[in-house]
Image (tube, rainbow, N blue to C red; front, side, top):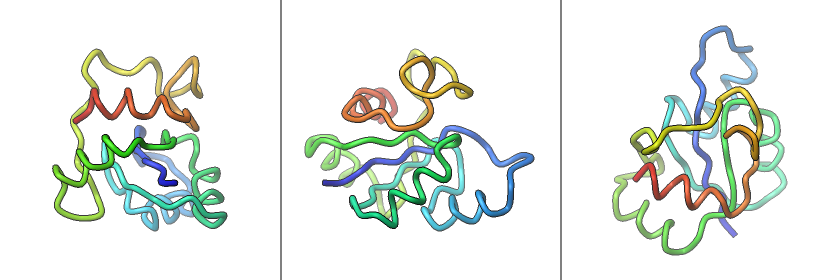
Length: 111
């Protein structure tokens, strides 16, 4: 299983350890997306920066679309059409954190 991880918040007034974790995930800018495998080390990193990203299980269709669009490990996406609910509250009321298969709907709006 593969997770899609999208950065939703910027880096102003952020702890250096959290910035280092985002850098290790190759998420240096807002609306960048990466695909990561499902293993304990990545899950720990995702939990640590959960207040800056959204993530979930990506479908094969969306994964192929991203790989076709991108030129490397980082996919530069546009802001989602019809916007985000909130970048301050966790899913389902907002857009941050783990969202399961609902990440596919967000990625469709951002590609």
